[in-house]
Picture 1 (cartoon, rainbow, N blue to C red):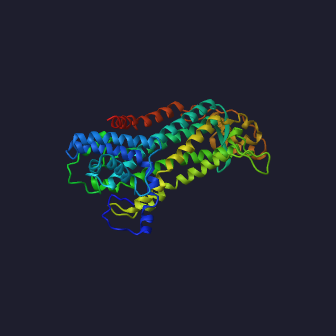
Picture 2 (spheres, helix red, strand yellow):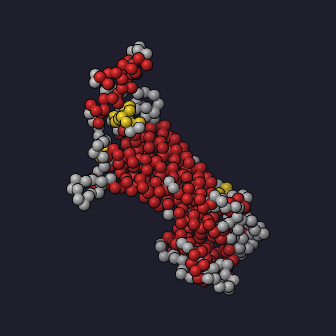
Picture 3 (tube, rainbow, N blue to C red):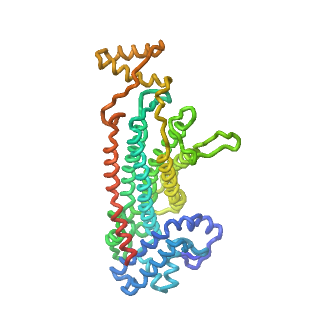
Length: 445
């Protein structure tokens, strides 16, 4: 197998198999970002005299050709090639000879893969944010539509106080806003340039790291070259916590939906086309989609701990342990996106029961309302509380089924406009357009 570090010494084939693992498979996730990073690096090398203008003029079109082959699905890492970095360099060398060999000057595969991971993660975070935004808007719309539809609220899975579908849908919308605040912090950790840190100790070449930072649209760079390498694993763990926060919100929503869709509750109805059947029970309409979303999201919530267990006892510097993180981290974005897309579809079409509290078994949900009413009429609250409790026990409790909540965030004052503004402010702080512009400019060179 062709290796960038090959010095004509043989390696045991089992060792080779074991150490490469799933790298070639995982590297396909990173291929387009490896090419974009190489374009920025080449432009910088020309600026410091390590490439001529003619060499740069021949490299950039070939790198664009490789990028197009990745976009079209034609790119592959050949059987005898170790990784994506080796494959790109091999393709350049086949076309351009020694010019292709020069592109690795001032780089190590350590900072190359760090860069690839950051560019990949930056793009995938953007995709997750837009998926979350779509679900958020559906939840807000449903909250507004159902703001006057009452339902029982629960504590300890016991009927507690009046709630509403406006509150229920809106609660998950605001939860997603908090998730995006955490995602924004993770994005800012990710959006720093490690290129130029080489193997973790910099380079004797006069690299212009500020130039590659600007070319690639990063906010700034990982300044300390040792920390740039220490950041591998830490970046993935930070992003994993943000992904897990989104997954936690979706998992809880899926659990509620399964519970409220069940015959014993009948608060919600999932459209038939979103349910599955039973091989033996003709009546069954199972919420399999929500159950799978719940399971997948619960699995995603374990990701930060898995990454932590790999990196928590590593000293500074690079170690091959970090390779294993890619197998856990790279596929998770598509899995969460799939869950978000399905949840958005379901939430858009789900219908609510508008007559839940017509059933007298939910009379006790109005106990606090009745105690509060008596208190407003002048009775001390503790006496009102006792009277209502005794009336319930004697079977003489007949409350007004009327709710009047006016404070911010309550049944009658959902504050959805404020929640929307909160989400808009958070999303605008990502400033995705800066990275998009930089990528487009590089590919147009």
